Length: 127
Image (cartoon, rainbow, N blue to C red; front, side):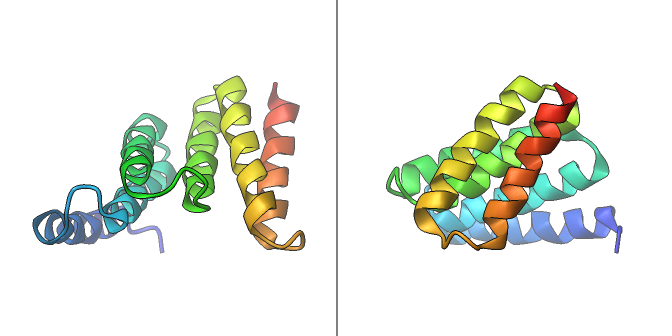
């Protein structure tokens, strides 16, 4: 709906609850960081989005095994934020990591595989 301030307000409130109720390495905290980053990303504040996407990634690194499919979401999101900033080489690197994981963990016809390939094509055209 484009009401970013309201979305941010509620994501912040939920994040504060998670921080009080969960251990610092809980995967739900990664999801919460990701949600906050998504608001910043949608507002075009890619630096702030990256800050929170990276917090999500660090939390996942502490909480999940290294081959967990959730890493693909982090890499994809970080890649799209770098693309938004115009840093296409970093974007491509993260998007390719995401695609590799998605291909291993999802059926070949899954829409996330196509979306990630489309993101990669978009970045390559900008380079």
